Image 1 (cartoon, chains in turn yellow, green):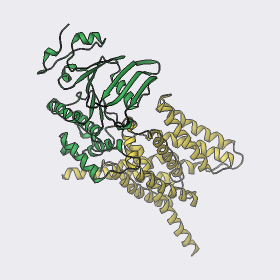
Image 2 (cartoon, helix red, strand yellow; image 1 turned 90 degrees about the vertical axis):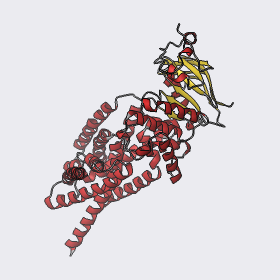
Image 3 (cartoon, chains in turn brown, yellow; image 1 turned 135 degrees about the horizontal axis):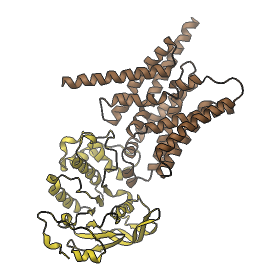
Image 4 (cartoon, rainbow over the protein chains, first blue to last red; image 1 turned 120 degrees about the vertical axis):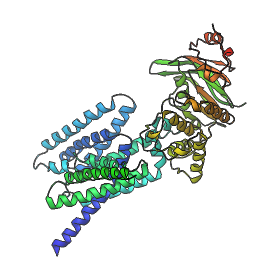
Length: 271
Length: 247
């Protein structure tokens, strides 16, 4: 009896986690893929590892540390590259490695038992807590609200920033808010997919959607659906095979992408 | 005739590189001004200053806010400033021109869409309303961006080399279209091709670091010399050659 209740709760947790991960990654992913910010997002992801290390060292929640590092690095790159102080891709490359280095240094300086690094690198459903799920749930609501309320404003700034500046004095504010939300989305999804693999959780679903549609809203909706199919299946495999969730999720998503490509090909040949 | 904008001893620069110096220039309601000058002379910079994309280092730019709000000018950039591979279609792109009148919360209404479809139709792109931008030709793209610039019915329209990508089959229609628009908005058109535009515009502004206003659409080589505005004069086809004296 106790065993089945435990299992039931575990499945609910997995499904909720998969749902919120798909919503957040689908919305944020559509934005970064459309705006060609994938490399910047990779930089944010790895820089946030510095925050995880710092969190351990200071004895605070590592996710909190990661959030602070993620947002600061995202804003830093945006700021430096708009002011043309440094080439954007170089800045990201430096940040990427520096974040990892800082994380490792802090973790090795922390006395006592060293944390399970593998779960941070590749994700683990076992270590995902109720608080993590709640954070992702809140993030889902915030992203849906933000992108619905300001849809046209965000769309047109990201499509043509120069033109947007000619009519709106709020371009920078929106850029900074959106980039911060992207950073938070990445950080909250690290627990699910891990640092090495979280970027694919954001980029593969929009690329599956873009095989079938070129409309921004439809790309976002289909990304969430494709993401959920991939994440839920990946979790199930992870649970039964005892493989880190990040790996099984990404594997499933790439498989989905290949199937979508094949389906599109058949559709075209039948026309 | 009401003044729309007025530049007073305006100087603009990139870092320490002065591009426009001590410019005094007025644009009035109903104007149709050809902005000409050598490459690097500051034509595009003049537009950027008006659009607020570049702040003047000295002098003033005054908007007659009773008629024209700074954020409500129409603008057609020389090269598409947006990413043509971005997932937006022709309708979405033209609709974005309405943002000059909207708040950050605004949504597009059925009326807005109808208006955009009208503009798209008038530009000969009716069949392409739902087409993604990356499936259009250079000339079609240019027309889409013209549609974005005019849909909001701005009081001032800024065009940067608009004829560059316009297919020759559309060129006449294009200038007819601008003439029509000029009835309700002032136009500032940057062009390197004096001959091609002189029969369409009403006056010239010669920009080569300094700006000289020429209150007629007829301009001679001697005028250009006097304005220190060295440009190659190319005349095309049916445009009357007499307006351009050789020197």
